[in-house]
Length: 328
Image (cartoon, rainbow, N blue to C red):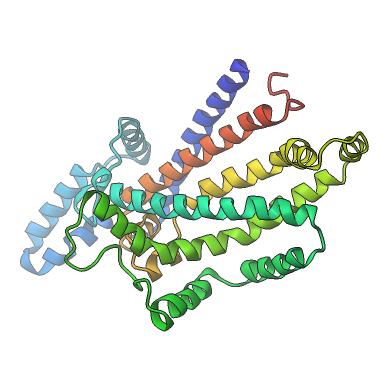
């Protein structure tokens, strides 16, 4: 097992280096001059000589006058030291910018994920056991609608129901205008403002997750060992939760972990519609402003999360199902 973990860690490091190089070079191929964009507000205030001098100074300070390979080496070594680069939009270190948006996205994803899994796991197991019942048929219709309807349509419907028709929740924002609440009261206020986007994210996530759980359970419940266990008089709860559910966890674990890692990319549409200061909205701003240092830093965070998620998936297989021998 230890040997397997070490091999997977080496794989994570190699893939990380390769992806970092490819993404760095890809962003360098995008047309545009970030230094000229930074100097655009001062263009009318500077003479031609002053503009050229300031342009050369900024280019040298950002290291853009060096060959691409040297630029990549400097960027990558700084990345390993925790220096995520300099934002040309906010004119400050990227590490001082992405902290709050990242926490907001994690806040949104954590609550919606816990709520969605808390509903879909027991409901998926129940509908698999009670296949073709009224509840199962109703959930099939609901999940098809959930997969088919775009998230912005769901958001508009929820805004109309709970912010216009029944004005319970605010339409957008993360706190009341002028609010200075901190501590527990500030947390409660944040939960209140996040309730509607969390509800939309939960509904959007439930449909596909429910169908995966239901399909995995139906497949396991049709196996011969389940019929054997029932014929031997094993209690139905033991058959369902100890035998069938444990074996159904293999595909479910893959889905859940990949779901968590992909969610950290941010609900760009959701964050924009509800005015949330999240990581997805920040990335769109970075791309439109050609702030590639900030975008690259966030991309590398996603890469690390995805690689660690993949490693966690592989290790979970061996823990859940002893038939999976990761040491062989």
